[in-house]
Length: 250
Length: 361
Ligand SMILES: Nc1ncnc2c1ncn2[C@@H]1O[C@H](COP(=O)(O)OP(=O)(O)O)[C@@H](O)[C@H]1O
Ligand SMILES: [Mg+2]
Image (tube, rainbow over all chains, first blue to last red; front, top):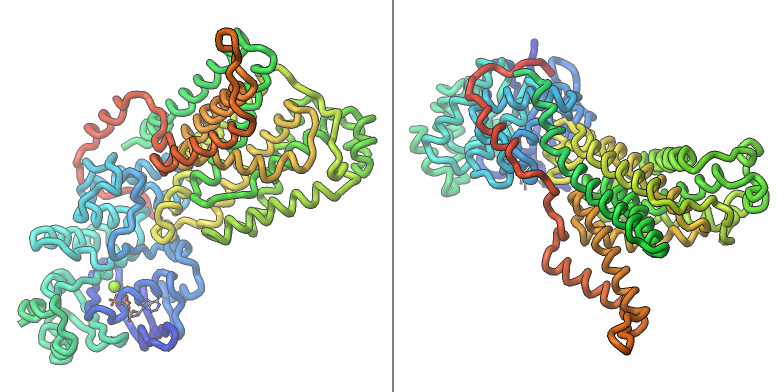
């Protein structure tokens, strides 16, 4: 079966266990949500899946084949793309060049990369931004550019680390629509990390809840909505940002 | 969405930079030939040689953001290779008795000699780079410095093929300005072609955001290595031409002094732009020349006005510090370009058609 799979991943940072036996899988054409309080290990899991962090234990498998030991650029070339919390655009380059970078990183000529970047900007809906210097964009546009950059070369999987953070409700809704299109139109497997649980419940086909490095719940939105464990986990670490989330859930 | 016109536009959008810079160099050469005295001719040759060196340095340092203190080592290699290739066999027997016989018997014209010398330096840049390019930041810079010291030590001690610290004399001297102009223009176009190539783009991305570059599939050590090799070849070519411009070399001709002056010119001009590399050399060299001239004394009416000796270096230092304090990214943080009519057309042409991007990974 085609899937990107985190199989019993554990990661320890100098004694601190950031992940303990975390399991998760992403399948083409579906959006998987990954939620959990700050510090739960969500970004660490994405880092493991994309070769930025070696797992202490466990395996990452792409369509059954292990990715452990590959460098990040090699993982990307096998079709596992990601974005970062906070964008990390190439700030001094124009938007179109930001996308072209992935094209040439995947081995395209500059010629082919330009053509694909143009098409991708159109598809994401940000063609008018092509010549803007990336460092001058407002963050809502920044996130779209980051997504467009990650989608270059049509990866099989894309992992989005809090792409909607700080967005207003209408902006987030627009982004959620784009994320659905990535799954349905490009048949890409999407992993969505997002704090707004309401948005995740609406957008995702499947949701994984992480708390203190461990998966505490895993299932379709209805199951997550009804889960006592999830509610309890969010109560237990009730930060300001997670309280309104509970209201959405009830 | 045909790809061909688009690509043309990447080159078209940026070709004005090397063209304008070449025009500046051509004008300087023509002025020199038309009005220049013999010493002025030599000054201009020195400027063109430095344009080659600093442009070569820019290819790696400017695009990668990794400061290199080692490139003048490749200049040294280029200069000695030019000596090996172009000196009369009899003089080689005296200076380099340990060279293989076929090389001692060979005597190439300076042009092909300089090109081969550049390739020779490039090969060594490739070898050193394979190790160095895995390092980052300060570690990489210090390692390039160690490489410079190593090359200098080898050339200063390998008596039979480098004449050790003795001056190597007998390198054919080339006094006409044209080969230096051609070399400088070639360096400018090589740097431009690299900058707009996929390797140059990837390298600048890795400079801005290395983490995101990895996530874009960029093999950072590899794109650095490409630039390092090309850059080593260009400064090697510069070394060869430098040898022909002065006729005498020692290992210390290519050591800390030249490293300092070339890096200063790059930084003052603007470390991140080709324009900065070329104009940094031109402006700082003219300033140095002007100060030297003042130091020697200028007739003012009956008397002569002269700067006290040594003031030249001090003034140069002051000027550099002032420039860097006011413009930390150098005098030319942006490239010279034609007025941007093309850019405006591009923006309008991007239609908002929603087609699924073509092509699989
Ligand atoms: N490179 C690192 N070194 C040490 N600790 C880290 C590192 N990265 C993350 N951590 C720790 O691991 C835990 C999980 O972090 P993270 O994955 O960023 O959480 P999340 O993305 O869910 O907010 C946190 O306690 C964090 O401090
Ligand atoms: Mg995080």
